[in-house]
Image 1 (tube, one colour):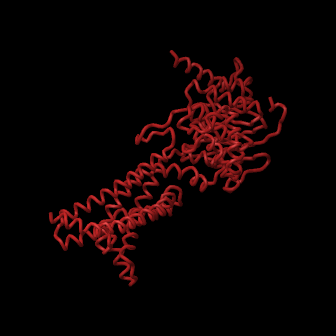
Image 2 (cartoon, rainbow over the protein chains, first blue to last red):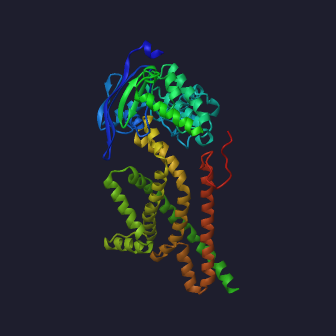
Image 3 (cartoon, rainbow over the protein chains, first blue to last red):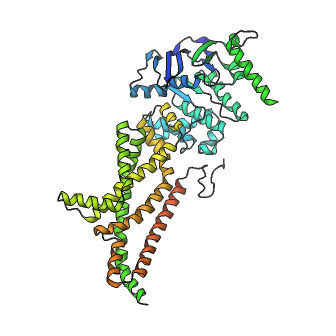
Length: 258
Length: 230
């Protein structure tokens, strides 16, 4: 694991709080991301996982708290700084959000052209590399409506990778997928982690979390309840909320099969 | 037999009015497009005050009949003793009205796009203006074509009332010949056919545009599904 070789903290999320209306969605959430680390956010729906990830990317503006990327504190009021920051912090959405009017390669290339100012030919070359990386170079000319859910999510990952992000945030990347398509997306994420990409991922895929995550962060009602390695939190007999939650998930799954 | 002779004699004269009608409608639609898109964006993304102003504008031009507006604008220019060609007043009135209607077509299209499109664009580091120009508008404009075709066909027919200001369009020329020959039935039937043909031609062109701009894989129900051929 690369994270154990390097202890450099590249992203610090400190004391993030967010209230929407009169509902407190996030309360004092803090995270430290080390280079090459994969953190998994676990928790019941409505726990604030998605809001936290979107706050880290300032797609939702946090009310309080600060974000420090590679030692530099983000000044959230500056649109220019925000745009530059977002190119370094990629985002993968539950429902893919591919640009419906662009084919796969243009989906990947468009931000290279518009944001990084790279010429179209070079951008397409780079986009093709990223599509190859997620195994979709043969689908480059297809439009989102012609791709399966798993393929769409892999294009979305390629699109994020093309920007050379420092960190990637994944908001339940497999939750909108048919069960048989989950594997292909998780495989891509596993490969990225092996290659040293720093990632925070909200998910309900407990087996994946157990096998691949460096750390599990358990959230409930907008609060980070506990965090630790999968081994610590999921150990046989461990008295953790994470373990309770997993047991509930498993029993629900087996209950649904009957 | 007499009717037919009148029609044949009057037809070249009436058809010259087609150029006037087409020019007026084209100018008005162009103006509606040029202002309707920014108005729509102002209403969706703008400052609350700007939204209010646009809403007020739309409310006014949707609420007052074109015929009334024509006299209103005409009266206004007379009152400031500024001579404007009736043709230009007609274009202006229709353009202002069309701006109101078109802005609502585009607003509806923009708001019908999933919010995730904007989020994804922002997440890639795009400025809002870039996201709107490269992600939102290209999709919204496609969705607007059917509504826009509707707006065209309504405006073309509304343009007939502009004859009250003395614009030499199809309608005005027909009225002039009818007053002289008293062949109302035959002449207005002919004029009806001219409007009908103009409408059909342009709607066909717009339908072709819609089909050509269709995003592969999406079925609009307008033609064969060209998608799902992976």
